Amino acid sequence: MLIKSLTMIDFRKYELASLEFGDHTNILYGENGAGKTTILEAIHSLAYTRSFKTRLDTDLSRHGRVGYQLKGLFSDHQGSDHEVRVKVESARKKLVSVNKKGLTSRAQIIGKFPLVSLTPEDGDLTFGSPEIRRLFFNKLLSQVDATYLENLQVYARLLKQRNALLQAYSNDGTPIDRIQLSSLDDQRARVSALLHEARSKHITEFKKLLYLAYGELEDEKSLKMAFISNTRITAGEPEHLYRQAYQDSLEEDMRKGTTTRGPHRDIFTFYLDTKDLRKFGSQGEHKLVLVAIKFAEGRFLESFLGEPPVFLLDDLFAELDVKRSTMIVESLHGGHQIFITSTDLADLRHHGLKVQGDTLQIIDAGKIQAHG
Image (cartoon, rainbow, N blue to C red; front, side):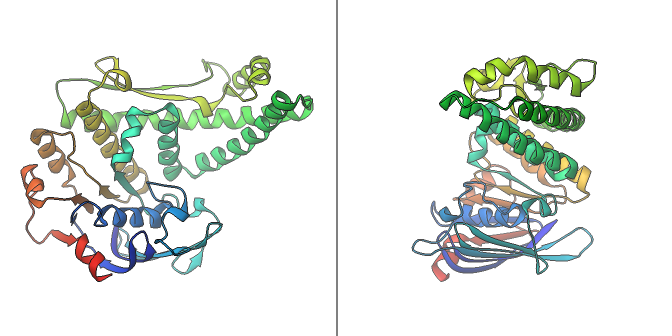
């Protein structure tokens, strides 16, 4: 997958800007605040209809304006072009089209234009709460498994209904309709079993790619990843086990006013030499694992979708020594389109990137902004 061109109207600081990109390495350089990351945000917003920095479209509109427009031309590995447009007219009205055909839901674009973003915000993936890792893997699996995405949406709807009953009881003493609750849990048990099965299968494949990617960057420590179900699922019938767990936890749920058991509480954890990375890892170790996760994400998407993803790399070399940076640069040379931001081209050379040749496009974000 390639993105060949991008047009931004009233997006962040850009009043109007049009860019064309090279098929290989694209370096976006300029001072802090020049608009380098904004270009990556725009590309991400076209592929997923959302920025990687915020979910609020109002944050993305140029100051003093309501709404923004994006247009991107993608090209798949077969050479077919696809025009994607995003038009935000207000906080509640967003129009997305692919090849001039309007979409009615985000699910219709998920997995169509695969890309991998590595930004400072992604640090939360290893440093942050379990919820952040669940969101990451839900997004990843949804791109390669449409049934998983559908079941995830069904589960979220059932969970919202169940929590509404529990909250009403906990806050106001509103009696719970036990028949309705039982029906919700029956449905939730079925969907939970399907989600668990899909997660177990896909995470097994992801682990293989993760360990391989990490081994290419680090040979002194061992990385392990654990997928831990919130509900004990043994060699029995998953649906039955979920239903029993939901019955057993009802009293606690009523007391707390929320649902304490289910896939929405599953845990994904990373370990370095058997130690929990989140608790004991250094800044450099976190960054190295994060890079390995992102490389594995790209390979996972490519293996399922048959499309090499675009890599968006913002502040890639922070917290990495030159040795590791050189290894990462070497790993990136695999037929992917890459975007790298930098405030200093000399620093990129220092970290092993060859800033020359016909496979490179250098874009001065400051000049784009000045002429926009």
